[in-house]
Image 1: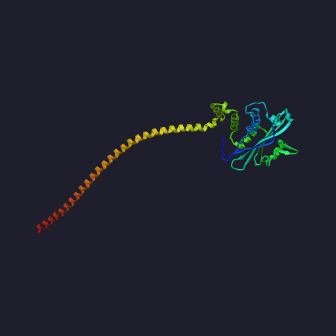
Image 2 (image 1 turned 120 degrees about the vertical axis):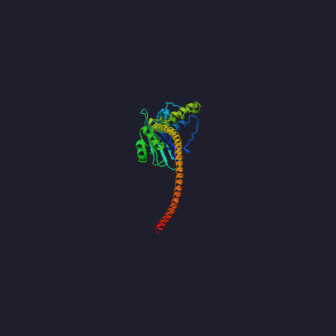
Image 3 (image 1 turned 120 degrees about the horizontal axis):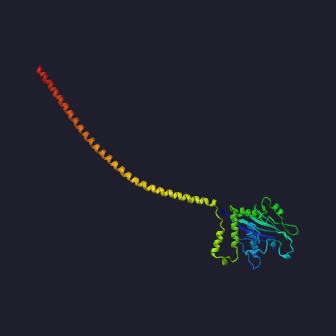
Length: 322
């Protein structure tokens, strides 16, 4: 996955040294954009293909240099020049400078190319990461009587700790991804490059139907591995489990409500019975208390009468004796 950076890198300059018809040419971009104008056959396409996608991944295959996919010309043809150039050996440099959109931070990537007739092409890719800028405070050539492009060893010494130099295409590609794009997997970055190559096809709008465009974009997506899909499948499985649990809880809730209704009716009935028994018992208690009070009053009266009778009896007994 690529992480978005609001202060992104944008293309700022591009240059060619001792390459094709260019001795030392620099192209300045405006807000990351460049417009090349000229008649057909003036070299606009070759110039652009020399930068993108070549500098993004270091793939020097001939069909990558031609938007039509032709393999007629190899990269070493542009390094040595035409047959009448008289060059049997040559070193060329291609570079592109990037700038942070909101700050004065600079990064340069590029390639050194050494060609010998009949011996193929030597390649080294580089990145200048310490802010030095080609043509300002860093130069890809040395001046003797003329501008002589640096050898790979000379470039390594000049860059020092302020960048990197790679001699293998895959290593160069990984380095560019690390500094500019930040894809977690190099395969994802490779898919982006393939998409750019397909979309640069001439007359794209005329030759490709929307369905073909859709297929191109769809094929550019990185296939998802089982490891990538596992969190999603686990989430779906968890959702199914949660759904089943919710359904079970809903059934249990409905049954519990039914039981609650019956239980509340039972409780109300028992409460009513107990309340009625309480009222009856309370009424009986009040009646007994009232009856007790009456009996106690009678007891007091009877006690008084008994005392009177006892007194009369004593008096009668006393009078008889006399």
